[in-house]
Image 1 (tube, rainbow, N blue to C red):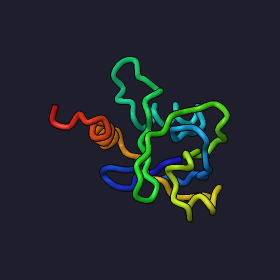
Image 2: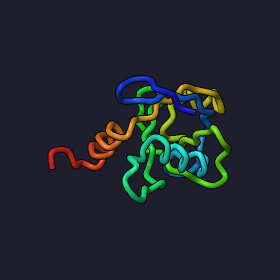
Image 3: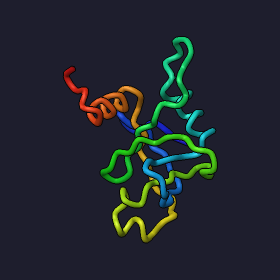
Image 4: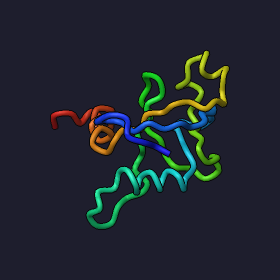
Length: 116
């Protein structure tokens, strides 16, 4: 699903579709699999519900697993999509997935925990 891209990201291709909730979501089973394969560090019991951090274009999104989202699909709230992208959906697009350390940095930034 994802392959090495850079020091900070993996590259994958997912169908992007407009969503109606407040957060970006993907297939629950795939979310857990990606969490286990790419975010787990192998020390004890691992959480498989941590949000993934993905980048579409220049926008970073936290992505949660949800039942009912088709496999290989990323459901993105319409208000997070620009008009041109929203009109062309659903479409297969390249998506960057932040590696575990980069995801932690981005989540810390989003929550205002930098330097604390």
